[in-house]
Length: 466
Image 1: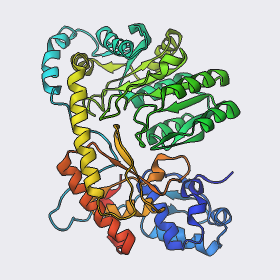
Image 2 (image 1 turned 90 degrees about the vertical axis):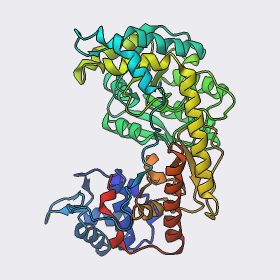
Image 3 (image 1 turned 180 degrees about the vertical axis):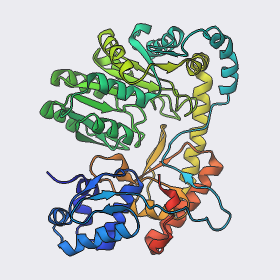
């Protein structure tokens, strides 16, 4: 079994690379968070064998990384990931702050302030409580359940748990129902923090491909039947990062196949309400199987700072989740739940705001890509981002070049399980148009460098580390 480093590098992408180029790619993995601080790397000899390179080459690679502070080495011992212990250098020019495109999130809805004011009487009535709730406020659970019912899945408030965001919901599900060493089917690409959660709970990941034009449905169902994974994590509406939507017939087929294979589907609906001009709303996955566990969140439709999410599942699963939750948290804050009740009472205003902002962001990205020869932006009917095709496997190189211009831009492999998809880049469409225009100007500078010559290595800004 190969090392995680080589799995992330993608051996096929580094064949023939110089020591300096290999070191640069490992730096990219560290800066992007795909290699974690303190993580042990293969020995020089083991890395040379895996990459089929000379020992002197891998010695040179680690030497370059150590010089720049990206690894620490003990004589006769291990090599571990580190970050440079240097003070951030001053930025030149007009000292603008970096633009972070690693987070695809909009600012708050205009109605957030008014909803907060309206929530205060409800909150005042709860001053004698602990300030948090294990299952969630009955009013909020009822509002979430009604939303599911209106979308075509009859749901009762007892089938809902309110969580501190969607990722918190995923971690709760895995804590209650996970099995270390089992397989988990994941889309490739997908939401990287979900991959990290599955890794942390000991799952072996089995990928199935998704692109802007959709899923390989046969591969998905064949993998379910062949591998019989314990869980499968999928994003069927405005998939993150591709923006694709899973057609209704395929939802039914996947749900049925998952029941046959004994696979529990964890469906992430965080992006479901992010419609620009899709023109239709398929039934939720939960409509096709009572065993589907659905997670959702307020963070994309109201504000990233609204740490309110939910889980919809059958009552037996809800009971199991509630029994597990106190082992790592005591519940979700009541203040945010009170605000969420008010916000959900006017979903039309939320979705109108989302549609307007995403349409403007999409136009700004499309405008910014004009003239960048070789880049293709696929249709983006909604969701968080555009999943662009760079026309060549240069995503990591472009990401590194962007950092030198104050643009944090995760490369395509950040969204995968094995360092692949170097031709792809996720560009969020969630920023205000003027901010997005500036981000695209910086991307243009990085693109010119990658296509026509890179800056000196010393120009990489350590303050851009995420």
